[in-house]
Length: 216
Image 1: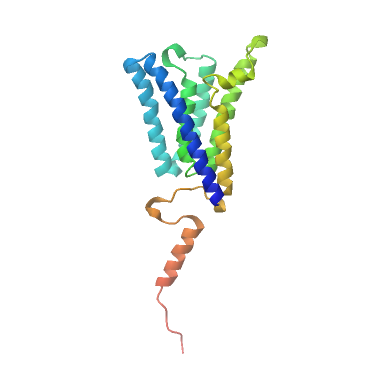
Image 2: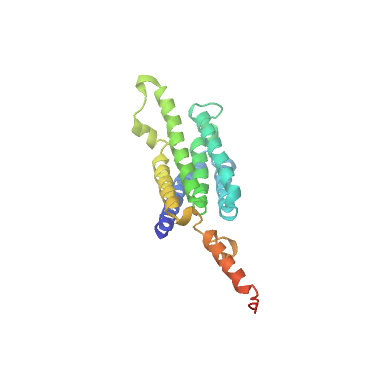
């Protein structure tokens, strides 16, 4: 169980470092072009969404789980539209697909502290799904299609390998945690959770139960 917790913290730190680095890089471009109020909004809105997702994942992981499932599906749909230029003009709105991946991946890092296996699974699905979408566009480009390395180093694919590796770390950590419990952080109020918590509550009830004298 201790190894599972350490792997979870390692995966969390790696995801935060990667999303922070990529986010600062994208923010720099947004503040430069288009710059001004539009550029500031392009930075502030994704950052606010990440904060909301993090709070939801930490405080209400049960509610957050289906929300993140829907978000991953929505991000993959956005990736299809962005990759095939269906309704998105990157010269106007920027790399929507890459930013959407970044926002959801950052939120999933916090979910991984509560639901390691689910967060890991969704990260793997998000990375492989996005890679498959990029590959579909590349294959459709004909004989002049770019090499695989070009896909993984472009703005939409540069984070797919780190996302996949971190997702696998979360998955392994979730399976290593004691009795399949995915909560690394303690529950609210510091109360025990899972089987251990039920055992402590049962012990307290037995200790406070009045003892009746034995019948003669």
